[in-house]
Image 1 (cartoon, rainbow, N blue to C red):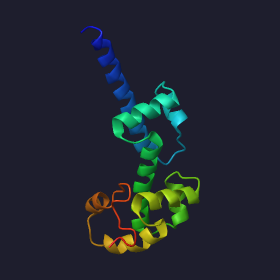
Image 2 (image 1 turned 90 degrees about the vertical axis):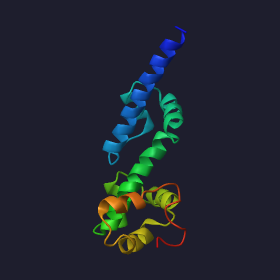
Image 3 (image 1 turned 45 degrees about the vertical axis):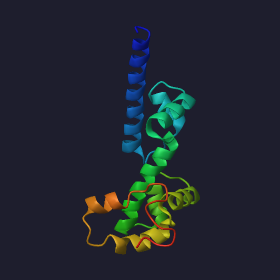
Image 4 (image 1 turned 180 degrees about the vertical axis):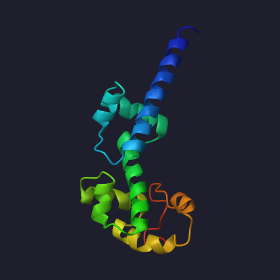
Length: 148
């Protein structure tokens, strides 16, 4: 039984480090972040961090980061005062193509279509409600053809 105690203690330490990584992604999603930098921040190898993060949260650190970026992009696109390109760079993406592909994958429509249709779909809705109902979850939030 005493041999399981160090393993349990290490597991709790690892979970705390993974929470710090997740919190950093949540805070700094618009900054340049990569798995190596995130891993260095918690004294883990990139491979170990990726495996442990996926086991704890069900997705890789990169996937989690991109989901946070797309979530923020959705809010900016609903606001309607920035172009798709401006939103792309505002949320920390450096490639419009990657941003658009990932956005379409997660949301179900390209960012330009989302921008056009989301303003109508969430009109009059409190922002706290619109954020919840428009949260990207792997193509389940929007039908392929339209948001409405």
